[in-house]
Image (cartoon, rainbow, N blue to C red):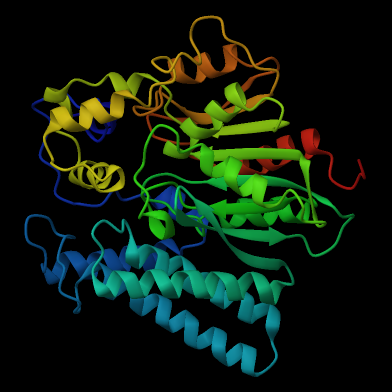
Amino acid sequence: MNKKSLFICASLIILSGCAEPTNFRDIRPTHWNWWGANQTDVNAAIERIKTANTGTKYWDDGKEFKPGNWTYEFSLLGDAWLRKGNSLETSANMAEAASAYYAASVYYGLAKYPYVRPTKAEQQAFSNHLATYRRSFELEGYGYQELQIPYKNKTIVGYLHLPKTGITPFPVVTGTNGIDVFAAESGPLVRDLLNRGIAVVMFDIAGTGRNRAIPLTPDFEQFHVAFLNALKNDPRIDTNRAGAFGMSYGGNAVVKLAMTQQQRYRAIANICGPVHRIFTTPADQVASVEPMYIDGMIDRMHLADSNPKTLVRAGREFSLIRQGLIGNGQMTNVPILSVNARDDYVAPESDMELVTNASRGGEILFSGENDHCPQDRFTAMPQIASFFQKHLQPGRRQ
């Protein structure tokens, strides 16, 4: 099977007859390297997990917290960096302590991944992930504040990051990742935006992480609106200069914002977000999808059963064509930058073109091919930060 076929078999457009996967999780070295993981350490942990053979159906699906378990091995890495961070902070070496805490947050984040029906060990790893991430940004001198705001008789949680210096009020970008990557997992992009004088609110999409109590439904773009509304009277934030980005599944929501909230947003970045084609997948093909994605979508949407027809029925409603927002000449004045790999099997080029054609001033940036999401994030993400800097004009009072 060639490389492209392997990628297709790992997607929601799988053709029956593809080889049975041997791992439960999607292994993402290029993403994890950009996030901050050391590839040698990741490879060594994965090798220990495979060698221990503690899984049941797959080499990485064991639940008992012991050597060879995914969460155990990556938590060990997180623990080591946490101890180093504590030692460095005690000796007043704050810059290096911040770096150590950030490394700890990355490995704890890997330890809880993908956080589907989490065990106690995964819950602890997630808690450690958030705590070390926060400490890292605080020691670097950035402002950091947890936001809890009412939403549909519940509470949603987000994290406000503030630049170290600059002219207030700051423009703001609200951002999310997808169904298995959470709010504290885009550190390099967040830091880049902060250093350009842009405040950032990161949060988990509906059904995930801190916001998993609220099911993922097609109106999940309203989380962005809710956080923007909550900051309207904050003197540090200029909500009239607002942008939003979404990675992977989160991209679906921000494209919808550009079409329905034109007066609220000056710029939108759709980073490998599916908007239509994947939501037309028939049930007989969904049955062959990688297990992590099947379990993840069922969990995030709070579906009552795992019948592929139920999943297809629920997923279909996320199509922005079906919602009547794009594909029939609809236009937005909000500039949208779409960033992706070519031949993405989740958010194909046809989806990127739909989005670009619906935006006056729309752009597409491709990085890599035959993969989901841009491959060279070290190059692509700074271009996204530059896009927001151009349109939100930090450093100017308005």
